[in-house]
Length: 284
Image (cartoon, rainbow, N blue to C red; front, side, top):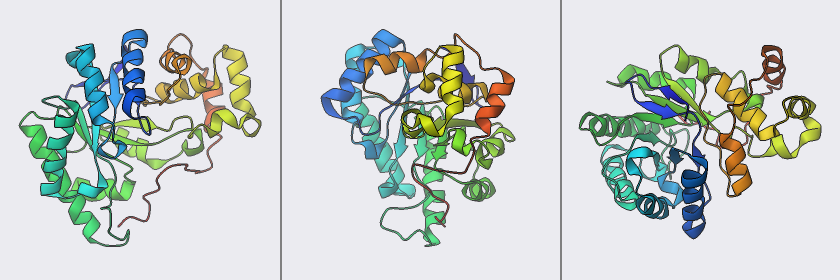
């Protein structure tokens, strides 16, 4: 499995398995198939996904904890110093593990609090302090944030003892010129993409994006593989989600071809600033 090296030397697999909205027996089946049959080595979950216990069962049955890079995220319902520590303890208990490879603050705001409330900033600063402490005592191998804008990251940079090792945001060709990846790159932070397929729109609405169909034909791979490979060639790891075995196999089979430089630039030109997922721009 290809990997990227974090600023602290930890290796993060280039392709992982996203598990949003996959729960119960289904997520257990998907995790087992992905690990056993496709050689996935990164599983991405979160407190708000409500599937940590099922994923924990799957990993325990597989008996491969040491071979799996396990990511979870702090729910915005538990933003704050004490709440973050309590939530982390529940996550590792549900996952039946003693440590996490990566723990992210899922969202810059606090649930139940208006986005313009300045307390959002102090709450997430408290969460970050908790993550730093958990990292320093070896309970987490790497820490980071998700859905942060450059403004949120700059606020964090001013007060943090440690910079994030990873920033995970929505990223796909319609956001090709988003400033966060370059901000991260300039500071040695790994930027990781979720929703690399644009919540499926870039695959399903082929008539809107003919360049993707053309490249799919040219390289004899699926549009999904084109999108994932595009991100990886930019140095951006990915965590695509699927419950279908054929798609799980395709999503990790993205290193047998390389997109030409000119074709990469054409995909970049799809940028229009469109997001399909959470937009945190208005969170104080």
